[in-house]
Length: 427
Image 1 (cartoon, rainbow, N blue to C red):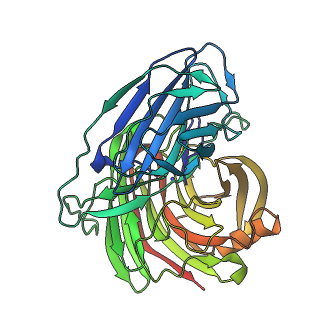
Image 2: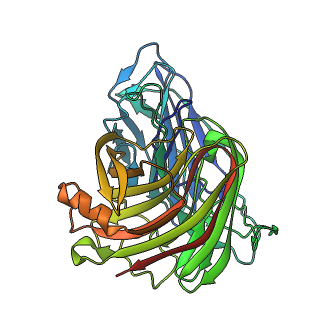
């Protein structure tokens, strides 16, 4: 999911990311009054793009409640955003805080994101306001887009993942990191081999390795908040079971997730494969049976988790521009103090196992079931989790399950995840 967590040292996570093969376009608003805004085109393709926006409080007092304003200069259209309430009227765009991120302490920054469409040109907005105050003249710098040369280059969409690290010393302490969604073109990277049953690695940002109804996504949505790299590989199918893995080395802000390498079934800001059985309406009552056997190797201490990420829409056939309404995470393993977004609501028993249930919102509803003890093997009907939420009146059964993802959210550290067998069957 897009991000949201905290740790001591604080760590958080969450879901998407920018397109490295297209370079980055930046507009840094000069400090004026008490705000500074950075606008980044993190990924761009033939008709769409992903934008990252950071608001910094450069004043001496906290901002308690904010609304960002700017205008698209070349006809761009907003498709959907996160970590705030986004709206467009003509060329003007406004973003109101999401509630949980309304307070910006002096010297602190909040991060937002959106997907949009463009045609002809994708010029950077020239001015930004926060609560009606102009943040300053825009100093625009651009990096020319560069595409990797590869015969097998393909468009892939990448989206958010979320996680949090919760402070272990004070249980009430929370911090938030935001996961963003994005779409980008990817090209195949040079392959390398490993003695531990790794077929070939792809270290290209947002690489998409398609195998049967699944695809492995090298999602590095939060890499701008640190330094490092991540690779993925897939070792093939045995029946319906996928073997795949990832390794990583990340440093930087311990409160922000850097990546969510995952095996994807179904939607991820668009579609890559067929025969997934998705979307499926919850009211249909179809089981979503899954099994997952994996190992985690920590070369250094890590802030991270291994989790399922389920996405829901109110429409039957969402595309890349359709923002989800709900997200459900199921955490099987965590280290370094990682914890989910929101607040703990209950402890429940599902599948014979105890889970702590958290509820939050980052522009859509986020529900996280965190296993009270780590495991590296699971056999679950994921419908049991959605039924629990429906029974509480939190998740409407008219919603469509559009995606089942399984991977690892990493804040900092070095290590690897090896999945020997992973499967999902709908109905």
